[in-house]
Length: 242
Image 1 (cartoon, one colour):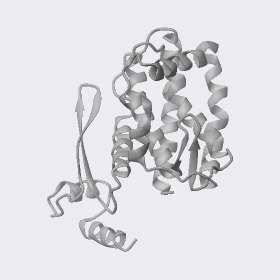
Image 2: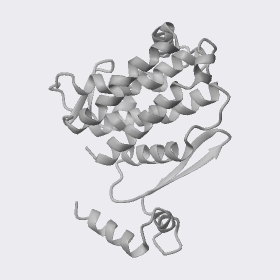
Image 3: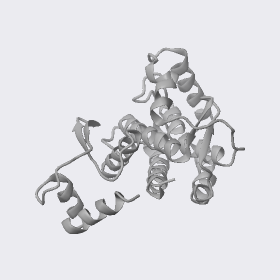
Image 4: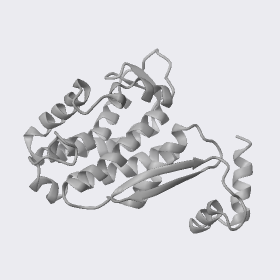
């Protein structure tokens, strides 16, 4: 598993917990959220379940079935093509609202242990994660990528539910770009172009062969991250050997 994926997941998990614990969330707990048919409390629980479920699945018994690819995962998942009122989405909303029935005070104990345990669990994790509610496995890196995507989406949903704009946009944008890069199976380098449409991040394209002159966008982004042009080229060449 790529350490960068684990670090991105952990960063998103901490941000998710921070937002879910905010007093504005508690104040609107029983109100309808930006996800129609789900309360703010239910959405908060659905958001933090991305880390509590991960902690639970990482210690589960391994499964014999070979992992499917990310693309096959999304092709198989019933909720992807389902309408808002289809049973699969209704069950998700109702289950989240049931989890939230204990009120906002029950949230912190739920996530504290998971957040503390996850770094060690990820360091000792196996190659694959069995997803019992789906009935198939993903590689550990691919599973974490799906949880990053869920958090990026629902962080903004929960932020809008309490009258806030995009939540931790730089982290969200980076996580979304990394998730798409890995979903498409990119290797070495690529440039993911995003646009902010109102309060929502939208993917424009993934350019797998971006410009590489000293005035192109990829070298400019590398320079902003403290990586000089010559060092960027050397890094790309070294990745070609792996």
